[in-house]
Image (cartoon, helix red, strand yellow):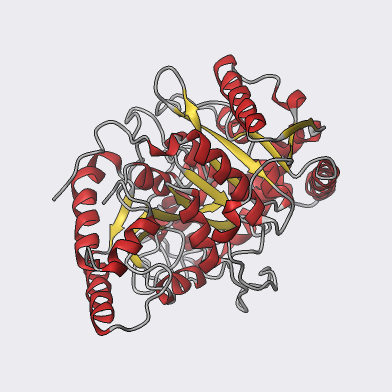
Length: 488
């Protein structure tokens, strides 16, 4: 079953060749066997998923209508609420917190008969690019367990790569869906900002955060977007758009389409990764695309802009975690001031503290004009440069990451770690839909990825470009060694 796409799995259930209980038990066995090595799951919802599966088998038996996602096991990044289940954000601060309500995305999934199978590991509060910042244990990359899976949605990407479940939800603030998707050789999609409700997501950067799917096939990402891409009254940034049918649009040929490439911005790529990207471009030419160079040199400032804006927003969003209402409260505290100070110092990890401190500094008197307001002006320039580029092309293509998965502990300098997001951050700043797909492998076997960016609200087009490339290249069909075992 692990070799099937989510759509194929659903169709086999609907035709009666496999039961929902058999599907869930199969993937629970894979989690039990393989996850101790990977560390993708923080919580496996065994009883809940089996109960849901039994109910779906009964619905099918009685001939009742079934949803688009019937019997598909889905993993949820552990900063998204599932009622009655822990939401830890991979932080000691939230270790014992039980969600009191469902995130909109989880409600929408279950309304369409998806089976939520577990909560997935991440960098603490989604702050990181390697998943080494989890307060509990790091996630390992299924392609090479000495390497990181990327972050912050490392658990979500690793679970899909190891085929522990066919679909997961991640979150993308500056590349946290797409970069781990590239490191793990799977598909990752960041929707237009506001396309997917963030109600029930623990906020990091409120003008940047976006929930999206990680899958093995672009069709599965399209299917999920048909469900979760809905307007939500509980999210003030939710776009007032009708649901879109994504799957029918994945049949559009790329012949005659123009793809923009910021060659000057990419000139410092490592030779092997640059060669891989050139192969992608040649493959797109064979599909009938015209390649147009575009000027996106302003993106060199995107990392600085992002870490000013995101840390400022993070320091504001995380102010609520003070040891008073929920989360960790220090036992050493005897005064209210000590409750705040000790609870945070004991509960937060080093990277979270670093970003809170930086954000507070940037928002302090005398610094807002020098940093925060200036960063907002440069963000506007990023948006304008993308808009100008899209007058010349239908989509923009660039590598997802400047490097492949690196070994754990290899990047100790925070600045070096931040630079790994150079090719993903700008789309978050501009709120653009971006689809990342596998683009091949290095000589050492590590996966690489490429991403397709389209204008706001043209999410369908981004997925179609990715799907057409995927269908021709077929890199998504290869599984990591050691994870292809059939469990009966």
